[in-house]
Image: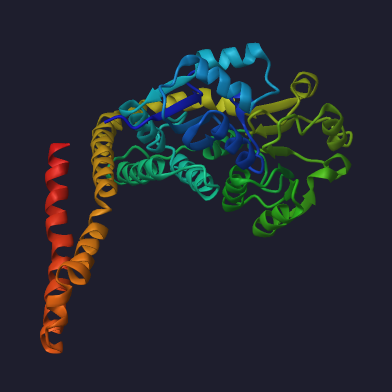
Length: 409
């Protein structure tokens, strides 16, 4: 059954995570840019997923997707990338179509394709990305059915297997690395960015007894919301360069396209302190200017660093992959079964209207004179009989016809 379903995946498995960051699109810019892309490439449906270690395009097209189409897609969507960068992305892209696309979507949401197998956060990211694209009228019926099956299957994986029995998220990995430095609970911690990742990290630290927080964010309201929750101090990101109270730890994760913490800003934040600092940079691309790492005493923890650590966790998680793959195979079959059923429903949705039209023609044209000669009581009985037969014919035989068609599709 050909659907036109395709997925283009740029992930940690085929690209350095710092390169993947170049494909990030700010959420406020996504609707306009994705609608323009959808129109230019004549795509029927489109869904865009971006996380710290993957960018994926799920789309439906009426034509067969070729290699040069990927180059064109990237050129249209990322005009600031050089031709050599676009060529590099085109070479390393993973392209999935039809059954393989469904397999991939299921594997992503179920975390067995994740940097950290068993990471539950990905199912929320997939659902949120779909809902955003749906609400912005980028998706349609096919991707809706796909995502419904993907989410349900992923939930089944997390419920029926122990793939996430020892959850090790990027945040928890970062926290465990931080704990190795034995910093005191009153250490001065600066959060730069108040998005999902930093919010989760902040809650984690507060839960474990840390209490000295300052939250910087581009939108002050979001900084205030997080700071209020963790009993910290909110400050606008624009005032980062003016902060003079020092720090012990910086935890940064923004969606910026360039380095938020420049050499000048970092040196200002030091306020003359010479002791070694800790910087946890969970942003893609990184928020910290690389020159700072070279020229200052820093214990630097990046997403790339955490990726190396996470490989050890795969050993335990991979024991469950066979069981997970069985569930995913079932999920794939269920998706195409749902798709067949949906196609039959669409093909048969005109039948009830046709039946109503036949009834109307029979009453008002073919048997009009006969019905006019009937007494009111007889006419009422006839209308009840016809109404009953109409209802039963639409429901009973329609279900039977649907069953027969599905068994022979």
